[in-house]
Structure formats: C-alpha cells, structure tokens
Image (cartoon, rainbow, N blue to C red; front, side):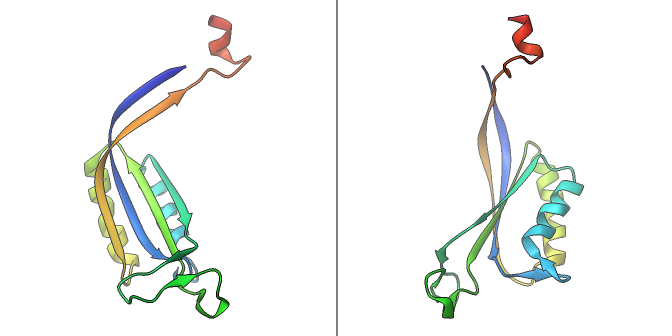
Length: 122
C-alpha cells in the first residue's frame, strides 16, 4: 500500500436538492462543469434534513415539507487557482446559495490490485 499526501482546495456548494438549471438538476450541472473545467474530483451528497437562511426546517419525513432538502456538491482540486477560476461558472448558474472554499490535507491510498501489474513486481 502506498499513501500519498498533499494539499488541495475544497469548494463546497450548498443548495436545494430540487434546484434546477435549464430543466435538469443544478447539482448535475455543477458536476458536469467541474469535469469540463478539468477539476480533480466532484461528488454530490443529499441530506435528509436541514434548514437555511429562511429558518424553515426541511426533512424527508413530512411529505408536506420535502421540497428544499439539502444537497452539497463538493469539488476538490490540488490547484487553488483552478478552483478560484471555476467560481464564475457558479455565478452564472446559481440564483442564490452558499459556497465555502477551504484548504484541505488530502491522503490518497493506492493499494495494488491482486493479479495486477504491481503484484507481479512484488
């Protein structure tokens, strides 16, 4: 097993899971744009409960208030400049929302696959 460590910039975008842009999920659009921009990775996480600026609690238990459930899109890239250069993309497609950007320490695990090229060298 090989561990590699290093710094990276994480951009987290908080939005409603039901938010749309051009008739498809806004979170999908953010991830597709991050991919086209060459950013290292992006993931979407759906919450089951949360509230924002309105102070209204949204959860998946009460069907009357299921809209507005929280969703996060997390983007990580080793280049702070690439992440910063991606911000205008968000400005173009977000009507409102919150994003955070922070520096993170990344640990990557590379384990040889049994029968793969690395195991033959061992």
